[in-house]
Every structure is written in structure tokens, then in C-alpha cells.
Length: 399
Image 1 (cartoon, helix red, strand yellow):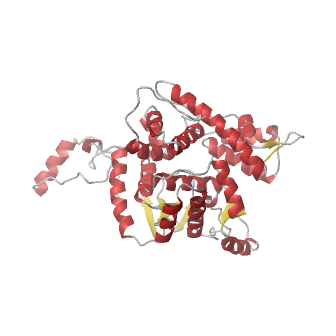
Image 2 (cartoon, one colour):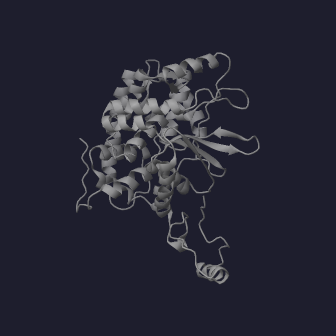
Image 3 (tube, one colour):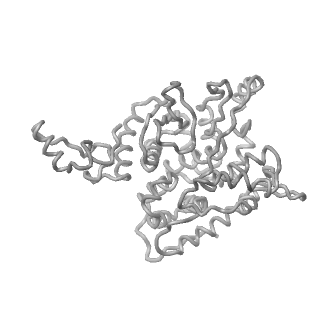
């Protein structure tokens, strides 16, 4: 895989001079039309690179047998290129099952969900089984399709991987947040309506699957996990707070250990807020607690039970959609925003076929910022191909 930002012989050599050198040596210029690179001289930016990679990976998808795996080793210093690779894999039909860092010294793969791109990353993805694809086509747009996807996806994930220290690995791909993301991505790429809100999805997870250590398993997998769990410890979950979602995950992990007051959480929480994304309008801790958790009569916050959680999620969703409606009505560039509000708005627009709203909002976000957010790229890349001509006056319907 070749990824570069400029001609390979240095910044000072003009591309026309490079062509002259190549033509002098070989007698003919190479055809670089189909070369999957990021190269301004060839007129190939990130989105052009994405389309070229989709074409390449579709051929990989075609020749790979259903139910088989494909590892992709990747290195680049820009998150935008990393996001393009992930989107290209999804567009080609693959389902991403694990993202890890290649540890060359220990010759092992260490799991990471923190967006580290300074090292070699390993993406493990698979081609869904044919019988599952057929069932999904029959059920798409219904909650049953989500259950089928989860059964397929959980069956493909490892059950009891261990760290070099002998601990059970905490597997981010089995957590409810990433399972929701994978489910949404699978529906988007196949043009299907996402039939469940996040609240309904989390309720379905609790009803249909088995939860262990904040991870979800099929029943037979849970039995295997339990057999190993009694003999060893689970590694402590490492969570890097960089936006609202990871902040909610961080608070949830602490409150699952024990209910706590806002005052007890605040000092630890503030220590984590050292690398928030520049575009993120980060809610304060008190708002994160009010929107996602339950306060007892003694003032301590705790994780709500599943039924209460659904009610809280529904209220939160309405608040996020109202905020997104404000973004749609604004004019000019959208430089800062609540990412979760934009994503909730995009999911609603997708289900109600308001594709033009997705495109219009994305095109008001600075290009560099847009390319840094994988979920935005995913919605924009698909919506712009099916959106009608932009209306003279954009309206967003959500109530």
C-alpha cells in the first residue's frame, strides 16, 4: 500500500521535473491514473484516495471466500488517511473486527482504540458469510436484522485473548459503544434503514446476549469466557478521553465500580481532559451526569438500570436533535459543535431520507475537521451520492 503526500524525491523537486527524469530513464511516462496515493500534483486528495482504495479493496472482497479474514497493516501520520482506509474497507463490504498496534519488539498485536497512528496499525476484517448476507437482505430495516448482525459479528470475534502478562484482554470490539457503531456502519453501507436508536440497541444487547466485564458474548462464548475468567484477571480498561463519548465511557466505568458524587468525580475527570478535540463543544461533567446517569437521594450518581436507561437515552436524544436543528439553521462554517449531536442528527436524517441535510452540514464543516472524524466521512461519502439537488431553503424535520 503506497500512501504519500508529495513526490518521493523530496519537497524541492517539482513534479514536472520528476516526470522528466522518469521519461528520460524509461522512455515513457507511467500511467498513474489508478495509483492509490494522496498526491496534490496528481490532483488526488483524501476523498479521491478513498475512492481509489474502495476500487482496490472491492477486488480483495470479490476473491476472498465468505467467512474468511483479511489483515491490513497500515502506517501513516494523518488521522484523515486512517479514516479513509476504514471507510474504504466498509464500502468494499468488509466488517472491521479489531484494530491493533503492531508491537515489533514482542511480535504481538496490542489492542488500541485511541486513534494512535504513529505506529504500524493492524486492521483485522472479514467478509460476511453468504447465508447471513441473504438473511440480512430479507430482514433489513427491522430489529431482527440487528440481532442477525450481532450474532454474526460476535461469533467472528475472539473470546479469550490474553495479554503477554497472562491477563484476559479487555476487547473494545465487544463493548456496547463499538458494537453500535459497527451495526450502524453495516446498515449505512448497504443502504438500509437503521431500525433501532442507541437506547433500543443497548436494551436489545442486554436481552439477547450475555454481558461480562462490560463486554457482550453469545451464550456459548460466555461459558468459555467464564471458565477462563475464574483462573485469571481481566486487564484494566485503558480509556483515553478525547470527546464526549469517551468522557461518558470514562464516567460509566467509574460509576460501575461504585456510585460517586459529582465532587468525588470532578478532580479525576479534570485530569483526563488534556487532549480534547479542537472542534468538540465538550459538555461539563454536571451535564454529562444529568444526561446519562441517575442521582440517588444521597447525591451519588450511578448507572441506571436498563429500563431507566432507555428513558434517559430518549430524553437525551431529543435534546441532541434540537441542538442539531440549531446547527442546520446556522449559516457559515461550523467550526465547533457537539459531535454526538451531529451524529444523532445524521442518523435521524438517514432514517428519514433527509440526505441533503447531511451533505449540507458536512460541507459547512472545515474539510480538515471533516476528514478527521470517521463517522462524519462515512455519512457524507454515502449521502452525497444519493442526495437530490440542494434545495433553495434547507429544512430539517425531527419532531
